[in-house]
Amino acid sequence: MRLTKFILSRIMVWLLTILVGITVVFFLQRMMPSDPIETMISKMTSMGTNLSPEALEAMRESLRRQYGLEGTLFEQYLSTITRLVHFDFGLSMANYPTPVAQMIGQALPYTVCLLMTTTILSWIIGNAIGLLAGFKKNKWYSKTLETVSMCIYPTPYFMVALVIMILMAYVKQWFPLVPSFDDFTFTWAWFSDAVYNSFMPALSLMLVGTGWWIISMKALSSNVAEEEYVNYGRMKGLTEATIGYRYVFRNSILSQVTALALHIGGAFGGSLMCEIIFGYPGVGQMVNTAINNSDYNLLTGVIFISIFAVATATLLIDLIYPLIDPRIRNS
Amino acid sequence: MNEGYKASFRQIWKSMSLRFKIGLCIVAFFLVISFVLYWFSPGDVMALSTYKRNQPLSWEHPLGTNRQGQDIFWLLVESIHNSMVVGIVVAIAATVIGVLIGLFSGFVGGAVDRVIMFICDSIIVIPSLPILILMGSMLRGRASLMMIAGILILFNWPWPARQARSMALTIREREFVNTARFSGEGLFKIVCVEIVPHVLSWAMANFVNTVLVAIGSEASLAVLGLSSTTTPTLGNMIYWARQYQAIMLKQWVWIGSPVLATSIMFIGLFLTYTGYNEYVAKKRGR
Image (cartoon, rainbow over all chains, first blue to last red; front, side):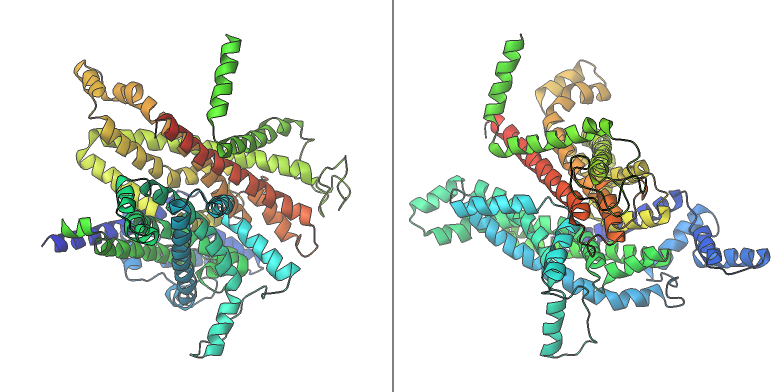
């Protein structure tokens, strides 16, 4: 009974988060001083298309209808929500008349693979190093590791990406400047080629991600390592490995799981930047196309998908949490 | 009097960790660049063909000139100035708004509290970069830097609000707040006079962190050409260097100097942030 209530309340939060997200995007878009339709029309006319004023007016009408810009603000708001909930983002302007949902569907697997792999790998590596650095905080390697991560973490992501790209693709031609992927086949050759092509983007994402996990895990575990029960364990004659795993690790990993949930939104933003800079063919690359073509339907679609994906990932982590924290499980 | 100040200053300086000192020095260095050196700038740094193109480093042009005939050094100084201003404006506004809303929410409690905290959580969870990109691409170049700052404030107030709220929850149970309440003080006055000093040291730390986040977000947008394209900021400088193929032409100073400046500035801000947190924790006796 209590479990059902817990799950239901989390699902409510999930729904409401998505609603708040849509609301923020909707009203911010309406507050902007520029009119997307006028932008689009001026873009078309500047390309040399000659249209009579009547034709222009008709086009304005049909575009307004297509973008759900008819009626009062409240009506627009309701219709936007109904459309988005059905994953109907309209047609793309850049690739007219491909539906936006279809374009996102093609790009999303690339982004999800890149983002999942790098987030999980850097979470595991960062926490392992952080645990070591916090548990053995007076050793020279702990101090070196912390200093290095303190220098990498605050650097804005695109700087790291640019430096990696310049070093590994311009100065030394180790990796391809622009990653390219063949059509998916279930062969070893395809996988190794994919890993080779996505190495630079993945490396840059992991460098920045790992830095944060090292810093936070180090702070947490060095606090835990000073607790009384750790001393007690030591006096009981437990090995350092047992203390490290059973006492320090188990106690400090809990807040790292919650932190992972809060981190996913930022990681998604990072992977967008990554894909734009490296030209990786995921959602970020599509955002780049959308920016260059003023394709607002595509952008709105990507934003909705990202809000949806991040909220869902947070929900999943929230639901997993009781499994690893016995205090919540038993209460 | 003067001697006393000097002595206590020396004492504070001594009790700081090395990390905090390095961070403070770096931040001070960049503050001097952006608010003192900036005023010696020789006019419009963005103007094209002011000087000879592609000059090497010299006394006249400390970092040389680029392919557009702009002096890289003064371009960099103005970029640092503008980035710093955006960071500070966003940090002041977001911290003040966040702390006030958080304290208010913690004190009032009940349904109001729950609604405010829910909105905070949602904004924290929602990925902000795609939304910033949408806004930037709608404004396309016509965005003024302050408009970008306004949007950044919207995404940065929830963190301080959350923290201030949890502080308010512990503080409101203390004796002195009850005393103030029973002696007939209004809620607003209690918050301002009794509570804000307690939150101040935390708010300072948050301020430094928000400066970092705001400069970083603006730079991310600017690198994509979505912030103001006519106002030089650190990201904007990288954007133009990339647009004019600085990497292909091997003009490393042009693209390298803003990259290096941003990295050092961020490390400085981050060291100040963590160092200050440590310092406050030590002063509290932990």
